[in-house]
Length: 97
Image 1 (tube, rainbow, N blue to C red):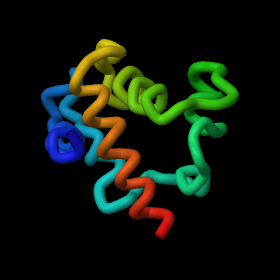
Image 2: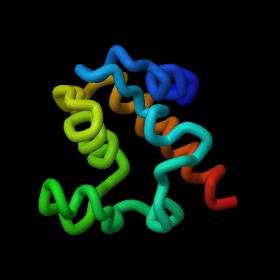
Image 3: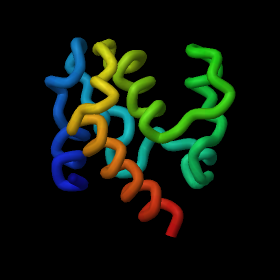
Image 4: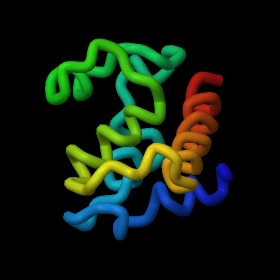
């Protein structure tokens, strides 16, 4: 699942504007200090754009799909969302070591 998530992280075909998750977050770029906090936690983009005080990791993936990537959110029960969430969970764990 993590390997699929890593592949999807780099896949610009998920967006409508040519961005991939890696466009903003390659090599750990674009993570702010809250990334080291356990989810759910506050994220400025979620609060400023969607009015959400705290987000879970899968919700953050969806927020990125909708806002920067200008795409439809992934189905909540999809393998793609599960894979991206699993990959980002691993990235987060590696980031906080």
